[in-house]
Amino acid sequence: MSRGLVIVVAVAGVAALVIPLVLLTRSSALPWEHDYATALAQAKARNQMVVAYLHTDWCMYCKKMEAETFPSDQVKSAAGRYVWLKLNPEKDQDGARLRQRYGVSGYPTILMLDGNGVRLDQVEGFMPPETFVQALAGVSTRVSSLETAKAQVRQEPDSAQARYTLAEKHLELKDYREAAKGFAEVIRVDPDNRQAKNELAYYHLALSLASLEEYTKAQEQLDVLGKKFPDGKLAPQATILRGQIFYHLGEIEKAQASFDQFLEKYPRHENVALVRRMLTEIVPALPLSAAH
Image 1 (spheres, one colour):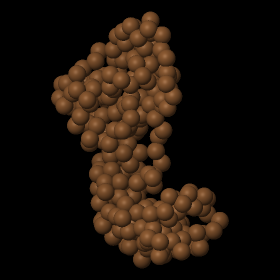
Image 2: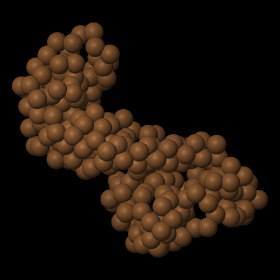
Image 3: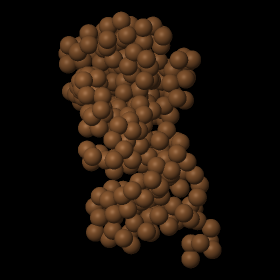
Image 4: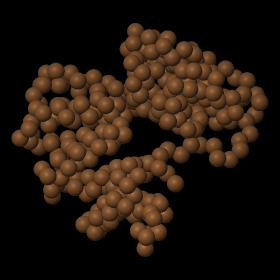
């Protein structure tokens, strides 16, 4: 059973794969670094993103990436835009730390990091050249838009809209700590909600805190959201998020109660199927007395 009740990316490679030996002997020709600190230093100096490739000796889809994706013309043409870091978590201490820090469970895994080691994105499984290049470009575009959002906040420090946009960019890049700070700032600069961003800010603050596993703080923000916006547009999503938090805390009966409440109050909501699926996951975990 999935412990997280979250959307996960399936790892490619369930079946065995046979790769021609001629492909396995090709060189990727990428300027791989093998030291984490060195890669970060280069990224800072060049103002670039680190592409950290986590692999193992036994991973056939890693070999497929190395044979087909990395040597491709598409990837080579983009190589100069990034710092390339190759680590084996089963052999390298840096790789083992990244595996633990980011919960890597499948290979290959690609981590996109900034010069401070902050994760910008994470993908698992084999990607053909075009898909891989597009994934990298998408993150780079979001990073660029992040810098634009930061500049806008510097120009308009009292704008709830500008601060919300910046916090949203951090959330898109999975930088939950900075996102939480940003959404809190939205509320701080506009306590009376004159710019109509506070409902969104409270919800996404709770979401960011939950993503950081700060569940008690997340529940507190949902409580405030419920008091200030009892019939708001995000009330259904807040009910789902509360149920997910209860689940993570091991409070299964409360999680079920939240999901049941959602189905009762919002029977035509677009997330009904999702909530029903989550209920089928958690009901087997209930004590027999509660399941009947």
